[in-house]
Length: 265
Ligand SMILES: [Fe+2]
Ligand SMILES: [Fe+2]
Image 1: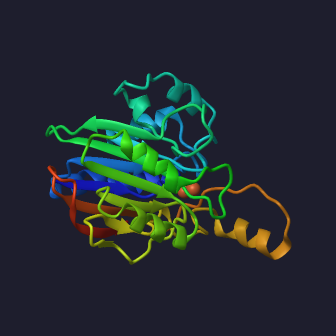
Image 2 (image 1 turned 45 degrees about the vertical axis):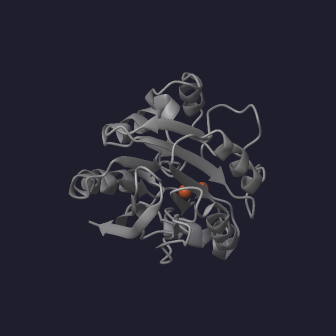
């Protein structure tokens, strides 16, 4: 089976480029499961329920997020509207599982593809250079004990390449894919690890690359040059969609291939 994972959608440029490509990509590869990191879909900061619904309309099965999950307060009510055992769209928007206990939303979703294959998606956040996060390595050990599906995708939303590579080895042979997000820069290290886990340190942003990781480059440069705080706004130029396409065995969950995808205007 095929899994399409789309990296952090950033602002309207990201939404447009994904809208332009996701349909033909899903059709051409007979994609069974589509997961999108949407943490920057709303102008770079968070995702609204309306934008989440648009991404589900485009074929997303599950949306993941990261440190920007709480930027749009209305997403909290949306997440709270879904019961833990529900399969409604609001239940399929995840936040990192290893945040403090008791927060709104969920970090794991278990479902079944249209073709009848059970799957799970886990959203984890790193601790290196990241705030408010609990140990993701022990957290994922605990989470995996409760998951029955063999096809398991992990979005590891983290800053440090070392922490992400370590997570790949930690989960090799135990999940189908460990795909990194958050840095907004795609890495060229995609491969299937020896135990059968597809891995890429960062899938990259789906958004405007004529920018500094999505933000208007002049605003960021001004901040670096002057130290003056300023309001950041999403850039628009150079839009690219970055994604990873994973091929795996539906019975065992073992990956056999991973392909790095970058599509432009
Ligand atoms: Fe992001
Ligand atoms: Fe992030």
